[in-house]
Length: 261
Image 1 (cartoon, rainbow, N blue to C red):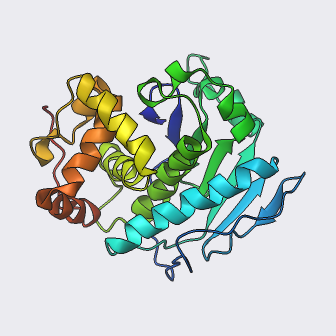
Image 2 (image 1 turned 90 degrees about the vertical axis):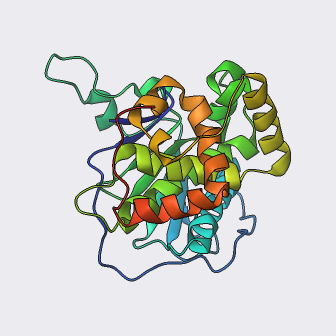
């Protein structure tokens, strides 16, 4: 299991190489608000390449918005979705994830403490409903920010960006975990509502945060040491000209995996 933020989000299953499929791009950047629905029925968001199944009507709009943001962010950098994405929103994740165990019998995934993940084998994002997300205490959120629809949409954007970067990877084998995390965190911050992003940046600075000095900082050690800081640092670095080149190197498999900070 590839952890995005400790005990909160994850990518499950093996990271897949690029798929040789026709591209999907959004028809527009901001999905319309859809009619409320009481059951988990399909909603296409008014966009190509995504279908949302939600048990809760209130979760549909932020889920659609999250996909649209990620698709726009990646498209602006030359990458489109190579395979349709399904977003499944429910109060509880599919039961087989809870039942999966390690060889020693311990749970494979800490599902009760996650609110979303990307399943690379099936090209699906699973999210808890917004109602479930909104019940979480602020100390479970990024820099202790209270849960909101905007923050929820930003996490959907994060997971949708995984979908596009993992399947669009042109390097040999699988995209390194920390590199797809770099892209997804940068997408999450870049497409976040400016007021909320400003709040995150203020808390990051108050915590003594500093941008990545270079691409060598995109490492498992840096990510594991400070996952919250990694979120902001990824975005700040991507805004630098060197960061744009780094993203291209990642997506084409030309960025080596450093072992130091």
